[in-house]
Length: 435
Image (cartoon, rainbow, N blue to C red; front, side, top):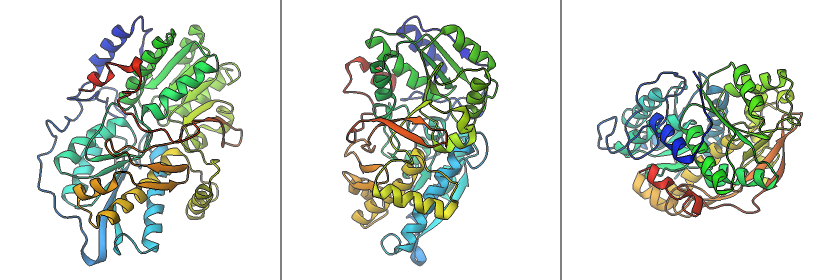
């Protein structure tokens, strides 16, 4: 069942939200794909798995084992399968060029199955049984938060490729997707500058949308505005007629969409069936990219907005090479998008850190990674010295009828990651919510 309410004050909103989110030290997720999930896995202070002495990464016989862990089945497979493909492409390219420290990368692939306990279980297997040097994987914040205590307890290393709600750092995670000040916050700023004053917040019922909307509400309040409606539906939800009726009744001038997975297919098709076009009521999405547009159908989402850090149409020499390589391997009709690109360059960042450290040892790799830059398809990215996020250029685009995206605004230069929004006065108090 969806949850719907109009926030009368931030205090009430935060209180209601925190009752639904749990976690030691972090705002916790509702499990992926489950309308009535059990309590999420504990954080590193009370690890889900007993800590073990990490075995050396498998480097015998001229190989280094690495893991890939994404949802290859279930509601999130619409998004995650392509990221898995991009990571495999990067590994293939690296092996063809001589590997890492002269060793070939041996891949162990697991399916998170759009289910957060499965992500934790598979992460534990990759670290304890397969003894991989690194894992590339995850999409939803529910999956990441389920894996986090496993990686910390076992001193593993995760490269996480998707934009998320911020308010987190882990010594065992590198975040190659955007944090909030590299996507959500600038998107709201852009919309306000464009004259949007009546926001309707629509999201899937788990940590990323709820925490993002908590932040958006504080940002709107600072601007003298208030959301005119807020709605959450379970991951995998497909019936949006009632939600669309509520949106109509609230009369917003923008829908800020944080739905994830194949729910976007249902929502945009039903929005169009209801006779609502982007001209009538635009939406801006932060989890819909070129891959999801393929599933939604471009006709159903033409002229709606998206906020990301990379588009397939981004004009760089590195991107032209990347798109060509991706389509040569997977088919000329395949598309690239932001998480696909972040998954791809994450493999290269890990390679650079390992070769700088001359070791796959986690502590050595983390130290070597500080300040490393890479000419990614979307532009140069740099690993932050302290929080293990990367600098990224912010981009807002409009969906074309062919499913590609025209960039209509960008930040001009890479934005340094600020996961706790410490540089925003209106965000004071958010860090405490994550403690």
